[in-house]
Length: 337
Image 1 (spheres, rainbow, N blue to C red):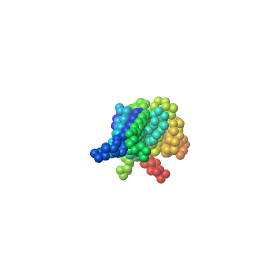
Image 2 (image 1 turned 120 degrees about the vertical axis):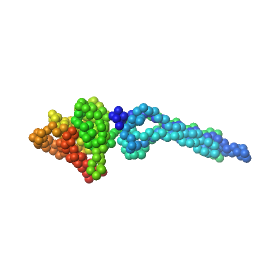
Image 3 (image 1 turned 90 degrees about the vertical axis):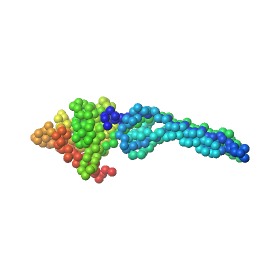
């Protein structure tokens, strides 16, 4: 999937079907010239339904079609026959799609499992036929109910990437390079900020044919939690990651300061993100000689007490095996469900 085809935010307008009107038919047969009422009910209008599909990765298919309208219910018939229901409209979305009412901002539901459904516009109820209204004092009612109107509304669909490991770091920290080396993903890589404008997903192959999913989230900048740059657009994708991998380049002026800034941005956006497991990877460590690495390790041991870290180099293929081992261990500890 190319970056341009990744769409994670769309607005749609939906209209459900109107209910069919009830029938006011009176029974008329050869030897029954004055039969009673036998009008049937109208069918209900079609619903507009969102359905989660595990085989979809983007909302791109909704980008060019924003209006959806379900079918109307059919009118009731004679001999108390009920009219056909209007055709339901199903809109398939990827797992991890949050559905909001655009007008009120209310979050309606997040579709997390394959096959999850949410009716966002209910079809109008069909009207009752005159057969319902006969009584001892009114034996031939000549009226029936009209069908009820359907519902209409505006909805915002917002997809949050589902991945086991989310890569967190400043622009140009080497996240895309690491993803391309660990997985078969082919993200755009260049030596300037914001090369990655959309999340990239890749499957990391581990031992015995086991795998886990890693997401390269576009780089964070200071002020991202306030929406600076493309802050909120990026940060929402981190919410669904089980483990956060902080990537900080070895040539950073102050590694601990960069880490603290990243953690602070996550905290300001959503404090619950700090409950996730964290691992720090010092990237581009092939630039360090042994003496410089030992010096840096002593410093990091003091500054990262209780926070696991390791040295890696995507280009030189150093420390990647240890990185995969550590991530697998963090993803499969007894505390995790």
